[in-house]
Amino acid sequence: MSSAGRLHNVADIQRYARDIRLEVVRMIALQGQGYVAQGLGAADLFAAIYFAEMRLDPADPSWQGRDRFFLSTAHNSAAFHATLAVRGLIERSALETYCKDGSTLEINVSERLGPLVESTSGSLGQGMSVAVGTAVYAKRRGLSHRCYVMLGDGEMQEGQVWEAAMSAANYKLDNLCVVVDLNHMQVEGHTDNAMKMAPVADKWRAFGWSVLEIDGHSIPEILGAFEAARSVKDKPAVIIARTVPGKGVSAIEGQLSHFMRMSPELAESALRELA
Image (cartoon, rainbow, N blue to C red; front, side, top):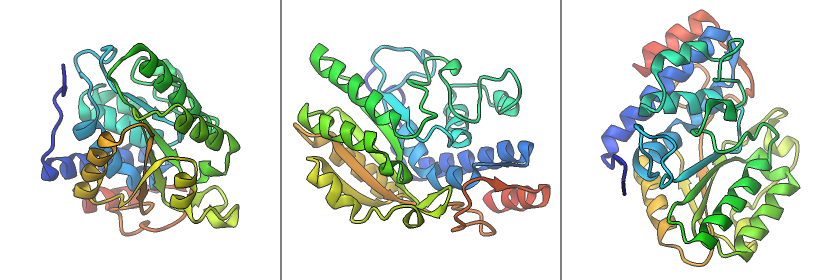
């Protein structure tokens, strides 16, 4: 299966991103708190990756020809699980079990969910290393699948990320594409409150990567960046996607709230606005 049902219609992908946001709000509302701002902010990226970019087969999630996705920011679980449900990789009814005892839909995405999760990356910074190892294996075996990583900008404060970045360039991993969710948010608030990371693009270029900078809410820009990344040869590609926490819900849009409380009133208002 070469494309596994990829969609390239911008309007369709925008609709799927909206559906992901709706499910994120519903899931967090069940708990009354959670990583809602990140999920809303990254929904467009998730929709583009899972509906337009990656090769996968909803009927066979363990298909060996599938592209591999590594959620290094594993706490952005509501967005990830919502994406799987909207894409038809898990039942939507499963989202009702999110964070409940015994559920495979944990607050940090876990391999307990099965082959849909390539690695457990609850400790920030580790996802890149696993993806690099997987990409090296694929290159040496002559396999055609690509590896994608969703990396938080706060994660770039982890030294392990840059060790992995240096290795990826050394091994000329043109089958590896990293998406940096540049929302300027971490536990302390703005990322600059912990450690200033600008200029981000120049850092990746210095490590030997092909760099693309985009608006992470523009589906045409996201799709164009992935297309450009696939054409890169002999080096890995990174897409630096500028996103806004809470995107689509005016009451919280732009708030740097890492773990947010969601009252029933706020959830109801958000669902009306997103619908």
